[in-house]
Structure formats: structure tokens, C-alpha cells
Image 1 (cartoon, rainbow, N blue to C red):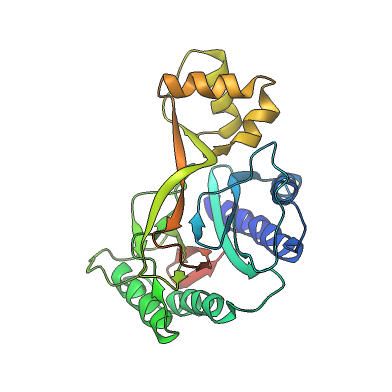
Image 2: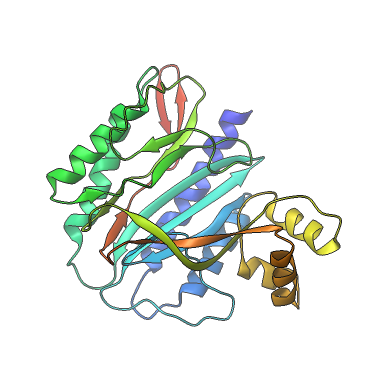
Length: 287
């Protein structure tokens, strides 16, 4: 039953998020954390919904460590841990922010957390996505910050992480109403900046764009199940992974996710939960 799979994938993602939060400490390697959490998700009977994101400071999203990096968390880093689990195509997507050692950005993190809590309180059958966005913006602005306007939450469909309906972080005037059975992620981003991000360099995350008869592309598609995958996944699959990825890039078989960064280098915090909406109200699968 799909509902049960959404709930179970949410439990797995939540466990991984909690474990990861504890492990974000000064001196710990980003790659080791990402690998550990992805292995944990698999050991719990799920697949990863997408590569573990560890975006830092002005990075909002779409960064995962490379297979050959030894970069470590540093004092003062504001880390966004964003991860997902998948069971029979049913996805859970969840995120938390943590500051390493210092406490300069406690209020920014709290703004994102409270915006998520208040937004979820607005979730019910018939509610407008714009009403939820209005609550997100109002909460973040009460803390003296801005939401990121060009990032949104999203619906979750089988094997589709970012499905068709956006959940804006402000009132965009949308008349889209919530309905029973709708599954989605709410993810407020709070920033000290004006509230915009732009895609810059490659963040080690890719997506297969089309089917192909080449063995390497068939293998990548099987490994990723049509969901985003990382350079670490490619490295575990192919000894000559650099060559495989470059050849796929030449033939435009892959989409390369750019790291989304706040346009002026300002700080960003993120909180996210996934929700299955029933007739009697929301079930937060990633609590």
C-alpha cells in the first residue's frame, strides 16, 4: 500500500537525519558522513531518494561530497543536511540545519524551523499552497530574515522527487488546493540576504535524462532508478567513472545539478519535512 511505504520511507529518512545531525562535528569528513548515512538508509530496507546533501554557509542546496575529497567540517560552518529515502518508489525528503561549534546563527536556524512548524499547521484538505507560503514568509520575517523566494517545496510522486506542484516560501497568489492523498515536502529556507539563489558550479549530483542502449547508461539508470545520483555512486559502479561520466556528458545523457548559492554570499538555513495528506489531516512522515 502506497501510504504505508510513504510512512516507512519517512521513518528511515528521519532516523538518518537524526543520526547525521549528531555526527556533524568539527573535523569530521563530509564524505564519510554522506557515505555512512546512505549506507544506513540502505541497511534499514530503503534506497536513497537522492544523494545526501551537505550544503554549507551560503550554499542552500545540491552539494554532495566528491568520491576523492577529504574536506572536513570547520568551526562556524552552517550545515544543511538534506537527505531522502525511497521504498517502492515512495519518497521521503527531510532536512535540518546545524552550526558547527559556534552559535552565531541560532536565530536563523530557528526562523527556518519555526516557519516549517507554522506552515504544517496550515496544512489541511482544501488549503491553498499560497496560504502555506504566506505563513512561511511571515514567520521568517518576524525573525528579521527573508525566505529564499526562488526555492520551493514540492510534491512527491512515485520515483519523482520534485513533482509538478511547488510549495512556495511566500504568497505567490497560487490557487492550487491540497487534496487527500497528496504527498509533498515543505522546506523553508531562511537567509540573511535578499532571498535569491543562483546555480553555480557542479555539486557532484546528476540525473539520467534519457534511456540509452549503452551498457554504462543502462547500469547508471539501474543504480539510480531514475532518481538523482552522485559521483560517489558512479565511482562505486565503474573503475573508470570519470570517463563514463564525461562520455555521457558529451551525448547529453545527464543533467548536472548546480550548487544553489545565495547570490550575495549570505547565510542560509533550511528545515524540511515530508507530509502525506489524509482526509482527516496531515501525517508528517519524517518527524
